[in-house]
Image (tube, rainbow, N blue to C red; front, side):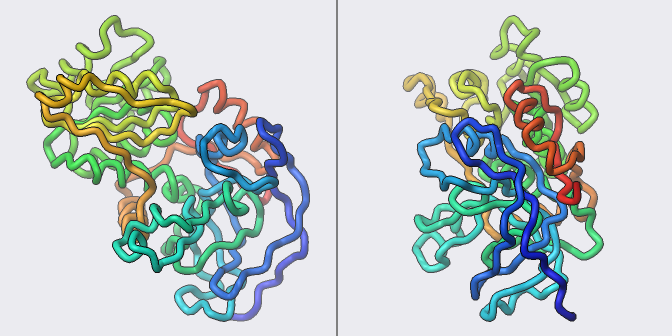
Length: 353
């Protein structure tokens, strides 16, 4: 394939100070290193992690200034001299994990997200809220040609993250899973992955609109924490037999659900912590946790194989992100809505406007 013209400047959303506002400005187009590809980003999802990056409220050093974003889908327009795995013209995705060393004990065991030398898109390196972004060629997601790039963008983080969490939950077909934060961007995909994996879904969130969304996406039961008088009882009753769900996925950006989950998960159930509310802690009663053999674990983003599996569910039409497309210039407004907990589904930025 012939060379694709690449401009010298581009539009981007840049984090220049803690708490924002994020800056919509022109910056230079990067050039790929020998092991990198340059991707013309067409669409990028906006994740709650991007808001944490803006606020800089995690105990993880963030690059400043940094271009935000880590759910970018687009087309390779240039590649470094060492790259053989991807060609110019291929459609790919840039994820939260931008690169890893591929040589440490974690990388060698397919746990590359745990690599101590990992680089993170939109956090430690410039991300996908720009029209052209670079990433390690071995870590980009392979997107089948002809895929709707706007629709697949949220799969690159939200979809991958919840799919990995469901795998970590060890829930089997026919069992039940409670999804906390089911009406948000992560939750809307978690419901669909769970149903596709043969699980019964109890959606937990607040408000009628989110409840309607959860039911439309396949939740068997919806528990509204804003209306219930006894959340623990209602979640237990919602599971077949009244013993509570076999697994819980904690996707909420608030701390309280992390303190409640062990109270309603069934004995020998698994609580999977995925959401990352700032400064939050997980606590549970030791006696109850021990005698009921409850497992509490964390789940981070998936590895390269998990990524392709998550994309395969999408390609077969088993999951679809409920998205709202807005221009790159509207990123600041999306953050405002996110901070007010008013987002249902996922916002996706169109890089062409």
